[in-house]
Image (cartoon, rainbow, N blue to C red; front, side):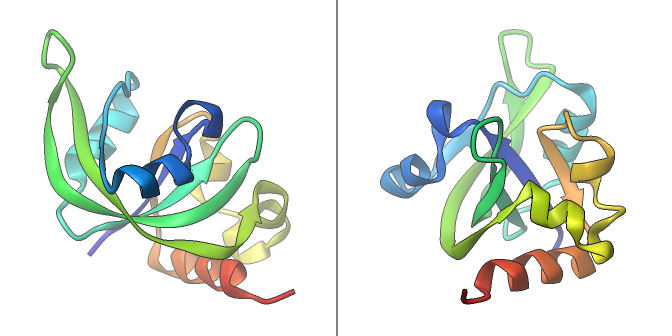
Length: 135
């Protein structure tokens, strides 16, 4: 299983909407690197759901429910279907991620504008643990 981070503006499509819908097609990604990442996703992979722009925090964990298919009128882009697994009890803010030395090489920080990026297993464990801490 691989791990990913997917970003969405909560005002456009947030975690609560994904939970209400039960699943969604992750469409409209128009960045070549992000599209390559979408094509690499497999059913069962998990993704950190990140609220971008306003909240700037990981708020939940989603699962890839269907692998990629062509997206857009020309079919040269990619989309996947995602479904919610669970909310994190405590959002993990971008500031907290930046402050954690174990996450210094995380793609979220290295390529901050990328809307779909891989997450290494050790980074995944740290972020999830941060989101499960009480306090």
